[in-house]
Length: 304
Image (cartoon, rainbow, N blue to C red):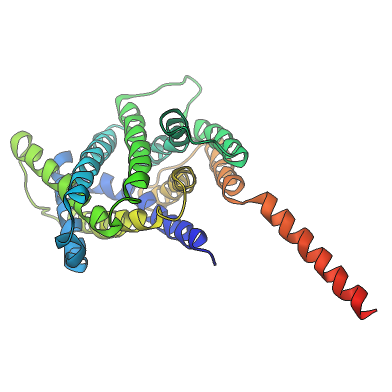
């Protein structure tokens, strides 16, 4: 198994965690305000990361700290737009709209980084766009403030994926991944102290949602992403993350009772197909099969 395949399997695992984050955030907002929830989530996540990776964090240089500060600001925009968005839309819809990042990532990479878009990726992006449209838009093409905020979150998410892909090539990925959580937590806490009645969770359900968000969706999720993105492209990362709304919809149905329309399920299937097409290198597969066939024929001829 190559490093790229291992990295992409790691990204798929955290995609499941992130699919659950919409449901968990929805539950967390029952007892906490948006900046308050985001602050606690990131500060707990940073504490966990610091306990495990304290050597890397203490050894971080000025460039790593500067990059983490930038990523912390992007994360702040990303999660605040998502958290406020979830106050006005469903967990399923949020997951689908935020997956628009799969379309934005290759476009931003092409415009600003002059990265060529592979044909298989272009087909995958096209299918992903169709799948996302089927999943999110109703017959009247209605969109509310929650949906708009989730689209803004998709933009932040796209920028985060691209920027972290650049930064991890220059600095220690673990220190970078951990420190960005700390900065995002501090930024959120400062805003919460001035705009909200900041407090700790006061119910078992609230604590459960916060701890799940902090440990699995944030501490593990973003450190794994920082590490895995060293071995795969930003576009491939975005396409894997596009499966997030599928997991979000399944979990929202199981635990929140949210249902999709029939065309929504069709959109989910198309979305999964788009990832398969973009991730599989069909040329190499066909070439490898051809070489194996030729090799087998050669062995058979020698035996004769």
